[in-house]
Image (cartoon, rainbow, N blue to C red; front, side, top):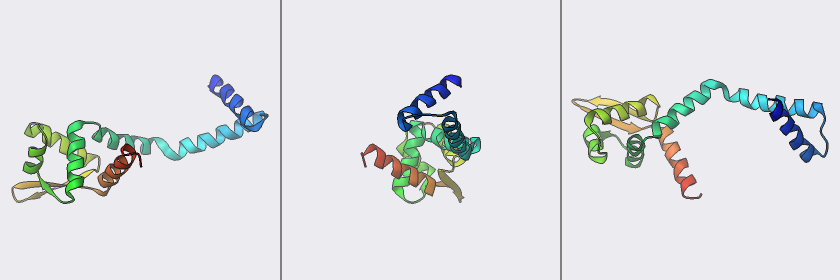
Length: 132
């Protein structure tokens, strides 16, 4: 921590022209407030969502459901990804747990649909990858 504080002091000296201990303390307080606002619960929830997308099968399923704009049956999703039925079930369960898709029984069929969270994330990713 001491090395980080010294480095911060050098940075503030460059930015402010001179730096006092009060400047370093004030900036450390500001940074602590920013870190505290995020909180470990928020970080863990966001990491769970990102982890759910960090797999080719799950990501493909999420993208297909977003692109479809409607519910798709498990049998339709099975035709899109090359995984076993249990692999598909596990992937869909992870997406549901992350709040990226919803599932419901329709008679003997199970149908899934992308949530607003998935739509938003895919839209952001499209923009960031396409340079927008």
